[in-house]
Length: 453
Ligand SMILES: Nc1ncnc2c1ncn2[C@@H]1O[C@H](COP(=O)(O)OP(=O)(O)OP(=O)(O)O)[C@@H](O)[C@H]1O
Ligand SMILES: [Mg+2]
Image 1 (tube, rainbow, N blue to C red):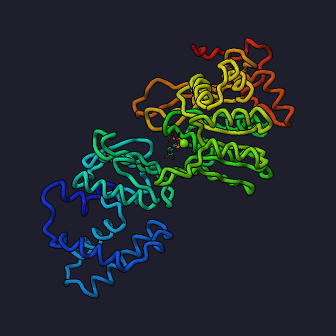
Image 2 (cartoon, rainbow, N blue to C red):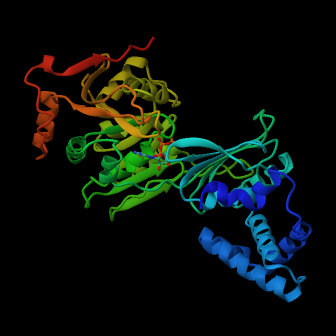
Image 3 (tube, protein in one colour):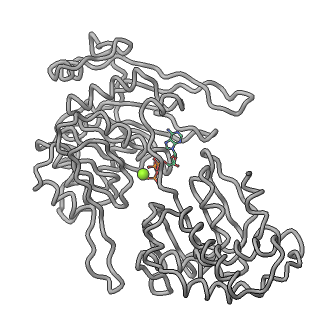
């Protein structure tokens, strides 16, 4: 059924005109209370979402048969639906959460709900009755993870036990009303699926495989929702099975397939503001755990310095993502983030640190048609305190816009610098023939990254 069809009853119905005179609306609060009295909430939270709904429907069915008025089949179904929607705590959002094609739900105040499907954002005809009703839904969501949202704590970022990532920001910070963003737990894609989606091609995968097996340090860079975590997860599959891998994440999303993986996740402060564990704490701790590789879900702050130090001191072959819009931007961003650590490091020393830590930058972009592309793969070719030199080995060349609205183009494969090729060969790996090895420096597509003021 289409989303429109799914939400037509009961919530959508109210907006298109007067609600049908089903005569059951007034029964909803009483039955909700009865239902909540009869179920065991702790037991419920252990169930998968669809099982939860089925269980509530069954219990409510018993209650109605036992003590309810005799209802027409349709009215009874509508009553069950309304009560269960409310009991599940997410009211009008329930049908959206059930729809597996939706990857993100964005509620901008009570009157505006947008969803993302296959990379495209569209508004859906769903609304909350009032700011208060929306706040109640938000409170129910955040209370499932023991968090609180109110004027003194107007922003919450959390992961639900079911995997969804939830962000809430309320007035006075949000001027358009209580704002809720729900990101579904991202589905893992294998590299061959990403090839089929046109995100990269098989030659690029071979090159990235050689980089990973030869223990190059990789940075996956891209804007919001460009597919960084998805690509990082797929790439992690190229790490040899016998290695000890430690993942550090703010909200655990990675789903590594290897046997020997330790997953670490940060912890926000509790309601008294205590007990916070940051990415930085975890990165530092992971260094004492004898890792072969460290994977940092996303660097956003001072932990960048610890990660760079780890990368350049024996934990090579590490991977991380950073939020940036180009390869140059990624380097600048790493530099800025590393300088956010409390250790005062002069600018040239940071440059040195990045030059010795970062080997490869994989730049992702989300295109106008919703597809994601590896728009560039570059090597950091500078050393010591030199200005950053970026050597491009792969680029996506988009063709002019076509009538079908889709982004078409080709992946260009460029010669790999000699030093890089040597390192790959030393590790017993090969440079895929379509790239080739540069015979001289002027065969390499090198450019300087804009120097920092
Ligand atoms: N290559 C791809 N092709 C199509 N869809 C993709 C691709 N990669 C990721 N997606 C989808 O895009 C959404 C965002 O993906 P992902 O979480 O990997 O992005 P991100 O860049 O890590 O986002 P954030 O900036 O929030 O960390 C998910 O719904 C995911 O399924
Ligand atoms: Mg991510």
